[in-house]
Length: 400
Ligand code: AMP
Image (cartoon, rainbow, N blue to C red):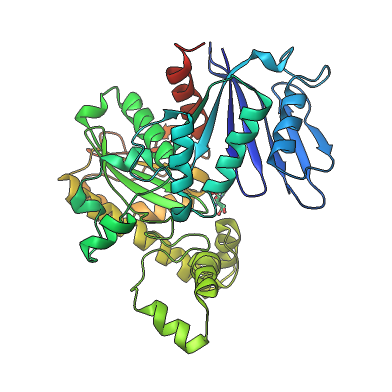
């Protein structure tokens, strides 16, 4: 059973083709600069050389068509014909309250996705474009939506309501939803496997630390809190996003700087975070380098980031009445030895300590806490595509 996993951004399409009999990746790739000059498809068949295809990729439909052609190409393809693809799984960013799990795409689901656009104006429209393009190019092939928000739908009201008039929730769905759910789900399940335990016995804090960052508290298999909110802007200080701030700062700065709502939105989402604090970069590698050369603001950005993560960890320990495992994942969490060390420095009161030798690891699933620690610390590379492929297989298995 071959399953295509598609993740459409505003000008990009990421894809992976899975052979679900052994969950191997047959090919993966990326279409970039859709609708722009210099559009390009980079296609990587497993075990073969990378292929770069340039051309006029005016929209997502053209992009998906190129991907399907590349997958079935006589030279660099991995399947004889696109008929071998029996199902498509799509990453969808916002499923609102309607979707607590992955779902087979139907006309009703498409209507519900359209209704969520207001809450994710940058993300849901390209996801919808991708689904429509696949429906057009692969008629009759079942498609599944896998939502970033779904895993967090088990959060209790006490965790997801804001201190706003209740009508804001009832009328407009203003509440905390959380994102990166597929990643939090995957790494928490892997941690339980690595501990040889069932999720229903464990309290796990997952730290998805990348350009966008969020933490989740997963108590006995259910997400009970997460740091992102109504949008991915809430919570930790991120690459370019401010994370939690006093909301009164927004009208204050808008008046002081004469900013429009759109300009303020850009200020909070694109100019803030560790980029805004350091003035160096949104990329933690650049910031770590600059801090190493004595740049004080770069050091401050790292300090603020680590402090905030540690503060959330402490909060989630209180929310769950304890913790059994802490997991680091995503670009920074998987790769930055220094940042993991910095975050864990001060968690000894929980009954855990990082083992500096074990922590000397990048991008590999490994326990990094000292032997015998009461609370285990792990690095686990995330694999959102595999979760999407598995959910797609589970939902479509009986239809094919
Ligand atoms: P992601 O959003 O998960 O792709 O993560 C991207 C971020 O991970 C980049 O912006 C970097 O800041 C960070 N990152 C990746 N590799 C490293 C590394 N070796 N050291 C520190 N940070 C890294």
